[in-house]
Image (cartoon, rainbow, N blue to C red; front, side, top):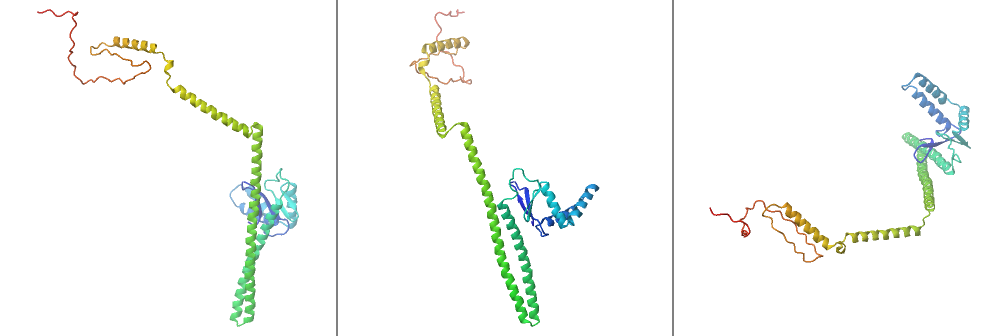
Length: 315
């Protein structure tokens, strides 16, 4: 990209820095003529005739713009708050000059722009030197074929000098690229430091507004741990069976009532009286109830009839 573009934190184009004078690839005049070519070609696309005619007129106006027209355009953009002129540079703001921005461009922006311009010039110089070296090589071979050795050696020296200059320019270009990356990283570090500073101030404000200090927080956490321990011990104490709370006489009475209720509901002669022997008043034995086996055969009763009952009369 020939134009130096500065973006914001989310990658959007924030500003474009251009050369104010001249028609080089990084100048305002070159940008206008390139925009003119774009509008002229876009007028052939599908759309209404009115829009196509407007694009065509804008394209013709910008593609043939003069030096005076470029100066007038720059002044108009400055009056409309879309550009700022600083010495030999023009800084354009596609979204308008930000209201909170104190300066159109900082020293770091100018340094980045100067690095960009120098890199572009160095790159162009390398391309010219490569062409000169190739031309010198061709001429040296041509004169050598003509048996003009001295002239061929002159072109060989020129080619060697061009190659050495290419190596020097390549080293300069590499250093400029490394410096540009370090400057970008330094600008990013400034933003990180500013974020950390705001984070620290925000945390301090939260702590001050809450009115809590470190000692208060530690005391609060200690109280919470103590209450949780007490809550757990109380729960364990409540879960333990306490025999002193239960009255044994009430248990005996309740069990006697249950026996009477079972006797009333039972009509089968097979049911036997169950006698429960309590060994201790504080021990409760709970045995699982076994259901009678249904497939057993009924056994004959071995009990003798009571003497009080009437015996059958002999026939």
